[in-house]
Image (tube, rainbow, N blue to C red; front, side, top):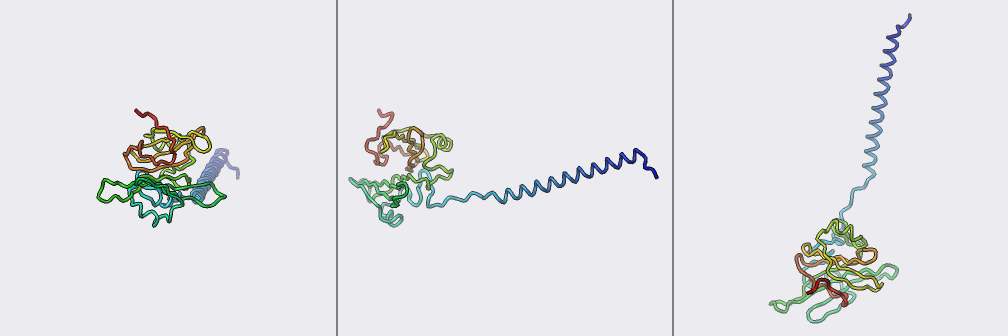
Length: 218
């Protein structure tokens, strides 16, 4: 029996349509499988350990602005060095491994002799280790351009010269209570300081670098 030409053409079209549909279904299955595999292979971001969290205006790690100076040793252990005079003190904790970069945490305390209880309290905390980060992932080693994206109210306050003969600028966000030290010529952050929110630090910034030149002074 002969198949009429139009029936043959119809059969071919039906076969081609079914084949295309099958190919599309197979492609969709493969794409879905690929998406599932990609999702499974992409690790979810892990929350930062609170022991290394920088909260502007509040704390760095376990040290909080406003906490009693007497509680520091219980929290961090005995400091590696101190520099104290006239109710003010700098307390340093440093890593002791000589084969690693010298990282430190320094705490600045003041005693208010005008109060009923003139006990030293934490005023500022500074770190230079990139292990400590803000919730947005800002740490030392980050460029100033990236820091400005997260902290738009930064203002240059002062500068000093470090041991490598680089000029280091202090950029402060007074409303948020955080200061970034940025070294030239690469404009990379070398240290982060947390202080009281809304507090001007022009005359109280922790005196780590005595030869600091303050900008816009009257």
